[in-house]
Amino acid sequence: MATEIGSVDAATNIIGDKWTPRLLRFFLTENTVRFCQLQDMTGDINPRTLSARLVKLEQEGIIVKRPTSPARCEYELTQKGRDLLPVLSQMDSWSSKYS
Amino acid sequence: MATEIGSVDAATNIIGDKWTPRLLRFFLTENTVRFCQLQDMTGDINPRTLSARLVKLEQEGIIVKRPTSPARCEYELTQKGRDLLPVLSQMDSWSSKYS
DNA sequence: CCGTATCCTCGCCGATACTG
DNA sequence: CAGTATCGGCGAGGATACGG
Picture 1: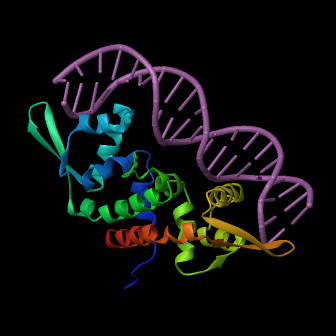
Picture 2: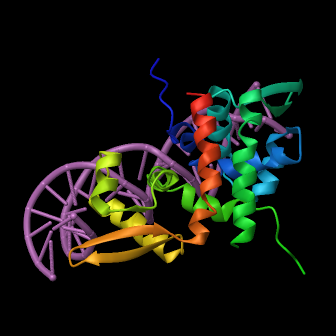
Picture 3: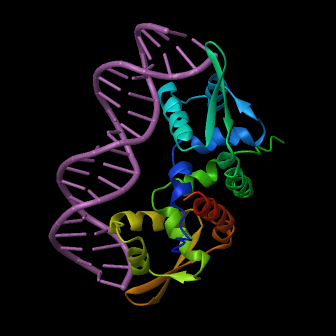
């Protein structure tokens, strides 16, 4: 059945984007997040860039966007996104070991 | 003591580079690797780029370079590099789950 | 075999300003 | 609050050729 095992590319396509790991890291401790929270947390991200990241993550089925009121919405991980958290955890612990 | 836990940046600095995850993936199955092997495996990587990656990985203490004969050498993971393999494994399994 | 040297393109992303 | 619009710089990395 040609199970193409052993590539790392799909994850790289997400993780490799600037800011994305930081954005996803938010979900290690929170269930939902809003646009401005991500802006505040990263401190410096351009709204244009942040928007682009969220669009891509949504297209890839990693997050879902949910309006909570007019002019307000929140983002949440899908199952596919939740499955990405172990990657983040590993990156986290490696990073803190080798600061 | 301001233990800055909970960043993902150090790993991102390595993993985020184009080609690097693929290069490191080699070490999931092999202990040492040579320049031309990496060229063959990736298929398309520019020698200039490959060289740059290896230099950076060496500077970061993730691999070591060892000449085996004049005009021949091999690369090997350090402990710091070996500690990076779990990240790669996680990326691998996520990628194969969501091809 | 293992790279380095030059040149050059392309697209990422920051700055800034503005809308629903 | 949650984005979109426009513009522009800059640097990563590809193409190609060459050297130890």
